[in-house]
Length: 463
Image (tube, rainbow, N blue to C red; front, side):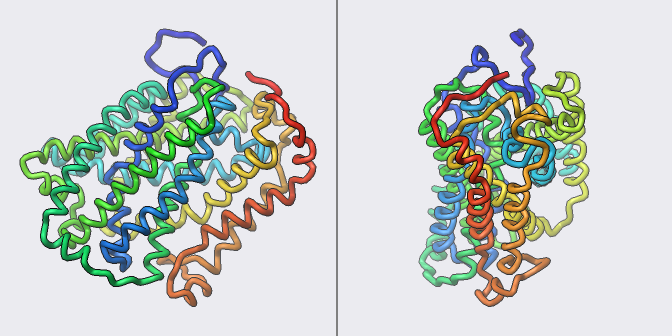
C-alpha cells in the first residue's frame, strides 16, 4: 500500500515488513510527551489532596509509576513482533467476538482521557488566545482530530517537539517551585499516613496501566527484528520518567498553590512562569495535544476493531477513518463541555474506575503473550472469526470476570468502599489482586494452548 499521501493509509490491518521503519528511540519522545501533560500534573496534585505530604508523595509517585510502567511497557514489545494494533491482538486471548468486551472498556478510557484533556487543554488555549474555555476546548479538539487523522508518522514527529519543550519548561518550573519558602517548608514535613500513601501508589499505577490498550499501536511500524529490550526500555523510560516528573510537579503545585491551583491549574502554572507564561502555555498545549491525539487515535482503533468484528472486514478505508476520528472527537468534546466544576474529584474516581477493569485485561494479555503462546501468533487468524482463536474464549472471559470481581471488597472510591478497604483504613490494593488473579487463572486454564506452544517456532503467517 505504498502511497505519497501524508495521511496514514493503514488502520487495524497488519503492517507488512517492507513498510516497517523507524527507531525504538522514538518511543522515548512519544511516551515522555504523552506523560508530561497537565492531566498528569492534576493526578500528582491528587496525592496531596488525598492526605499525603509533599515529601511522601514523591516515593508513592515513583513506586506507582515504576510498577505500572513496567507492565505497560511489556505491551509495547508486541508492536514490532506482530505488526498489528494492541486491541486486535486481544482477539488471540478473548476470541474474535469476545475481544469486543475489553474493546468497549478501552473505548471508555480513550473518551474519558480525551474529554479531561479537552477541559485542561481548552483552559490553556483560552488563556493563550484570550477566549473562553469552551471555545478553547473546541479549537483543541480540532487540533487533536487533525493530528490523529494524519496518523502514526506525524504523531511521532510532533512528540519530539512536545517532549523537548515539556522537558525545558518542567525543569524551569521545578527550579521556580523549589526556590519558594513554602515548598521547602512543606518538604520538611515528614508525617506519614499509610492509607493515602498506598492509594497514591494505586493512582500512579493506574495512570500507567491505562496506556496498555493502545501502547503497541505506536510501535507496530518498527522493524520486526527490533530488540524487545529496546522497545520495552525506551517506552518505559519515556513513560515512567515523564509521568513521575509531571506528578511530582503537580504535588508541589498543590502544596504551594492550595486552592489557587485547584481552582485553575493551567492559570496557576502560567502565572508561576512569570514572563515566560506563554512558553509554559505552549508546553501545556503541546504535551496535552500529544496525549489527546493518542486518545483520539486509540479510540479510532477501538471503534474500527469493533466495527470490523461485526462486519468481518480486515481494514478500514481512509475516508472512513476521518469519519470515525471526527465522531470520537465530537463525543469527547460534548463530555468536556458538560464537565462539572468538581473536576479533580471526578477525575480521581475515573482513574480508579479504569484501574478495576483494565488491570485484569492487561494481566491476561501479557500472560498469554509471554508465558502461554510465547510470542507465537497466527496473525492471519486474528482477522478470521472461524480461525484458531475462535469466536469467544471462555477461559479468558472467566479469568477476566473473576479478576474484576475479586477486587470489589478492596475498592476504595467515592461511590463504594469495600469492607476490606475500609478495614485497612482506605488503602487501595484492589489492582494487585486484579493482576494476580486474572493472570494466574488464565494461565491455569490455558494448559492445552501451552502444550501446543511448548516448542519454539516462528510466526505462522502475516498479512
